Length: 180
Ligand SMILES: [Zn+2]
Image 1: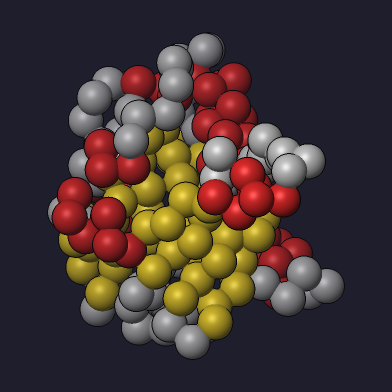
Image 2: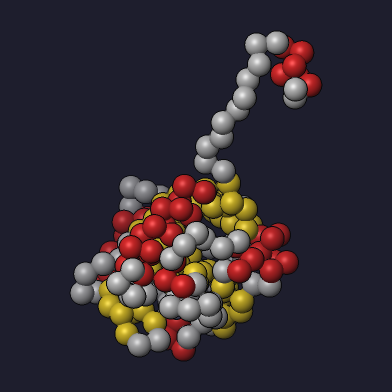
């Protein structure tokens, strides 16, 4: 269960970049595509651990959105809950242009509709580099209604965690402590 509303979602940069790559590959063929972010909740914060791609005939594209069939959603939930011990925190899909609001299909056919579930929309078929998170469409469902996060809310509630770093060391202990 997702807490009624996540105060914060932690997203590792490697998973963000890999998701973007997956959607971009399909976007090259001008096809909207979708992945699901699985993870765990700790108190009222969520941490993304994995990317799940619904494929095959149970995940089909139609004008104005993507539909993932009930059997596929069930299998996806089973995979996450099973050995993974995770739940679906968000669905992520691409749109053809700059518009990242929800279409009617997006509103009506999410893969989950539990309070606090998120639906993220990325622009331009994910071509180029990912834009700043404040330019994503981040939509949250509460009592069956979708509401888009404001830029300010995104800054407060989404944390992208760097997955790697290069640390320039010094063999002089004093330099390292003083950051020289
Ligand atoms: Zn859409």
